[in-house]
Length: 255
Ligand SMILES: [Fe+2]
Image: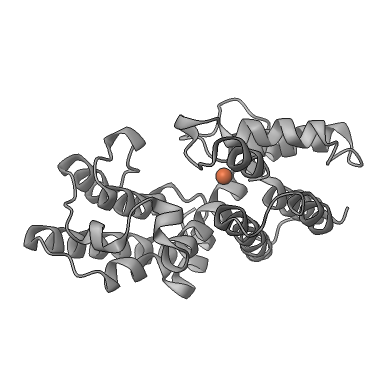
């Protein structure tokens, strides 16, 4: 199937002059690119590569209706955009030309792409798709973070974040190589730092290699002059610890 054509035709129904819509079109196409790179690095079979490509193309299809209905990307204030995406895929019969087994695998991966953890008990091939889409999506989040409008994406300007602090529990999570829980984030800077926690949740060291090619994850920290001395110190320690973790995992190629 020509997934890109189907995706772009669907997206055309929404107003691209809306920054949020435009952002999601660019994000989707970038995730697809990362996904193709990742599946190649992993030497996966043709069918898995094809399904992974389709998952990447449609993983955020629910974002368009979410923005139109609620004008926000915040799921807790609107809907779970992954669940909504599955509804859209079914209602629009977007996957209709695929076998029902393939459709189910794609829907499961889309549904799981934004969860804290992948639902337990999935069949091996489907679980692999979930792991792939979660990694590819996270990789591009760093590009969005570095290059797109901070207010559109994070809801706060860099000048505001420059005056904030890193909450203790968030700092401790990162230093222990643990993902930051959404509810633990108090400041905008906590949100920035929580992105670095994604590194610890990457399923494939090849995803970390892709991330290290551009180093987008550093850019917003590097260009912000934090006004609180303790914050500056914490940010430096956090970046150092994160990069140590990445280097070790790439060297060891784990898993
Ligand atoms: Fe998403």
